Length: 277
Image 1: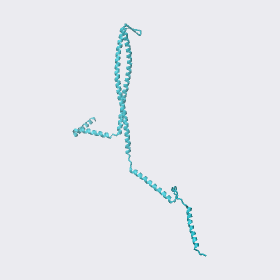
Image 2: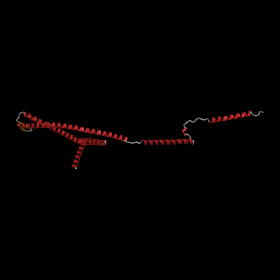
Image 3: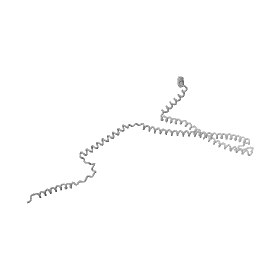
């Protein structure tokens, strides 16, 4: 299978070279670039955000590994510091003993007694020489440990700065991802609103129906008012308007007073025109 694949690839390359000549590699590169651009354009923003979150999550193992290294180095530094302090205390005691023996030897005695035990001058000198050699060796070790401690502290500080930088950058990435997600939600909400299709003709139809119903109600109300006037109903609606004052009794008196005056005049005329005796 592998042999067939290699053979097919070689044949395709040979055919491309034969057809396109020396420009075959340029065509292949251009085609590959176009394909990559097309693929990138088809990838959604949501997918890219998911990929970014995955990349950030993949940083956690490396950060934990570095954190473990820093913690181990910190413990090593503390252990070495305690060791140096203890050995420096021991060196101080050894120095005090060496100076005591040296002072005793300066006295020029042939024997020396320490804790009820007598020692010759040669024994004291041999012990002093051994003590001094051991002291010098221990002092060199402590000096080297100080150098090692300095190097370990420098390494620890460098790793701590690196760890702090990694944590800070990871936090910045998390904040930027949250901002991108918020922007994406805003864009999605705007797209959802813009994608809403409202039929204006349907709205106009509903508005026309509302106007028609209102007109029909107006007609029915007008019919009720007209019917009330025809049937002689009391116009309660006009009760609030003051009625014009009328003088019914005066009108009657004036009416009949005029009739009485006419009767009297007729009687007088008849009396004056009758036969005179």
